[in-house]
Image (tube, rainbow, N blue to C red):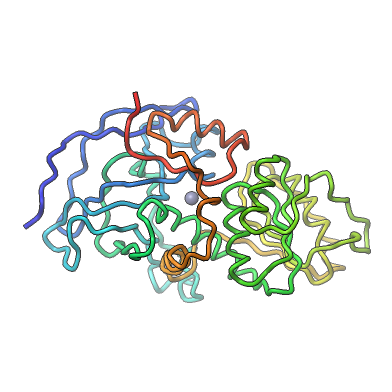
Length: 349
Ligand SMILES: [Zn+2]
Ligand SMILES: [Zn+2]
C-alpha cells in the first residue's frame, strides 16, 4: 500500500526569465508505480545553477537545483525494499552500458545519457521530487541528511581527483576557492596531498581554502607569467582549474612544471588561449573532468560519512529559504560566499 501525501500544492523557486527566480505554487508531482516521491531536505546551489539563472540560459518555468538530499514520502507499488521516511539521495543516472564511453568505464559521458534534471525543469528547489527506484541511494547512518546534499559536488571533486592521477608528492595549484575548489582541496587532503596552493582573489575564499586544507593562499596577481622554454621559479606539478575563468586558466598553465598535469574543472564563457608550443616543450598533460566516477555517488557518501571532510567549512552555516535563493545567487556570483549554500524548501515571508 502506498502512503498518501496530503498536500497537493508545494512552493517552488521557479526561473521566470530575465535572470530571475521567483517562488510559485506548483502541484505536488504524481508518481508512477516504479517511482518514489521524496521530500527534499536540502538542495545546494551549484555554479551551474548560477550560470543558468544569472546568464539567463535556463528555460523560463524551470525549477533548478540538482544537489539535494531528502526522505521518502511515498512509494510506488513496484518499489520494494524502501520505506516512507528512509533518507536518500538520487544517484547519478547510470550510463547505457554499451556505448563507446561506457565501454571505457566513463558513464559520465555516456552517449545515450538522458537530459539532466536541471534542464528539464524538475529540479529540487521545491518540496517534493519524483525519483525512479533504481536511482534511490541510502544515506549512511553516520551522515546527516543535510550534509548528504553534498553528495553530488563531492562526487565531482572525487572524479577530477581520480582522473588526475595525483600523488601525495605532487605540488598542487588550485585556481578558484569557491565551492568546487574547496571540495577539491578537501578531497586532495584525504589522498595525502599536503602541498596545495589556492589562487583566489577573494580574501574570504582564500581563508576558507586554508581552513579546508590548503597550505598556501595567494591572489592571482602573485603568479608570474612564464617565459618560453623555462619554468617559473616555483612551478606546480599538478593544477586544478576550478574558477572557469579564462585568465585564471592561462596564468595557471604558465605555472605548470615539466611533465605536469593540468585538469580543467571549471566551465565559463570566455575561452582560454593555450600556448601549445610551450606545453609541447614541457610535455604537459591537459585533462578535462565532467561529472562522476562510474560508481556515481557511492564513494562520495562514504567519504562524507567518514568524518574525514571538514563539512563545517565546506557548507555555509546559514541555510536559505526558497524566497532567499535569488539574493543568495547574486552573492555567490559576486564571490562573497566561499562554501556551499544549502536551500531548504520553505518560504520565509
Ligand atoms: Zn552541481
Ligand atoms: Zn553509454
